[in-house]
Image 1 (cartoon, one colour):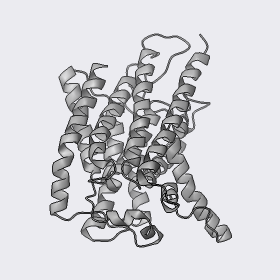
Image 2 (cartoon, one colour):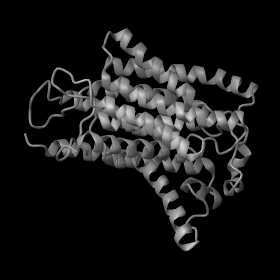
Image 3 (cartoon, helix red, strand yellow):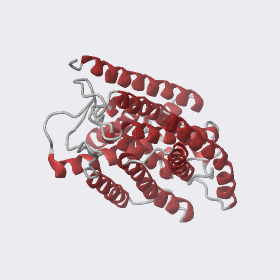
Image 4 (cartoon, helix red, strand yellow):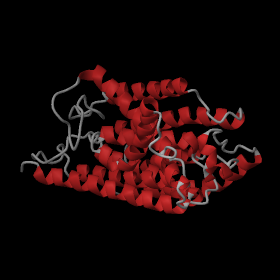
Length: 355
């Protein structure tokens, strides 16, 4: 618990202090967000063109420093699970950085081509998946398992090949889901904080009921549950510090650097804590926003009609006159309700385990 608290605090302070000079540097170099030149230009977001972007760099750096410093100060060893989740986060953040670099330096609003972006996400996800099935500990537990999981692993093993494919689907789906949510000041940051807080709780609970400590029927076969909680804490702390500057009206955007990185962190935590399908509830807001885009595109292609005035969903509410702060706070509330539901099911599942 000491490592969780200290690492998260260090990460938060670094992000809080480090974002201010980052804003100054980006402004001096005129590295601001280039808004899309399509239907989205009708939204109030167009007025934010020029706001410094690529702020996700601060979140990634603060998380990495917080993780390493927390372990050094408490003399706790870093684990394969923690390092791999941070690798997935940083790798996807690098893909997002390239996307942001093209936007701000080449003044091209769409950034990376979709194929190149998916390729980058796929490579990082595949490396993570392969490595996550290695590094067994003394109990032969690896950071990930070849099972699809809900509250714990389900059914029979799907094998390494299908597992890699499953991880690729999760990686691209969740990183793009957070990316789609990052459309209003503080929306993706605040929503991610809530999901990450849930993983601090889940990792801590799994540590208290670890099968390697007390072999009882109602325990968890997870390699490094407490370090998963540490990772969740450092990323959450970094988001807290960043949100100070990203809250409406935002002084800086996280860009694809931040949104893809946060999606990677959340995906990795779900995999190493064996809660992959539970993430559909914990991250319910991201699911809803992603589905709004799927529905909009599908409806237009099949019926040549739009369901929403514009997608993703948050911009639909902008178009019908809701204030940005109203949308952000209400969506945070929705995200919080999904997290509460997911945690309730997680705890209820533990109560139902045979004793």
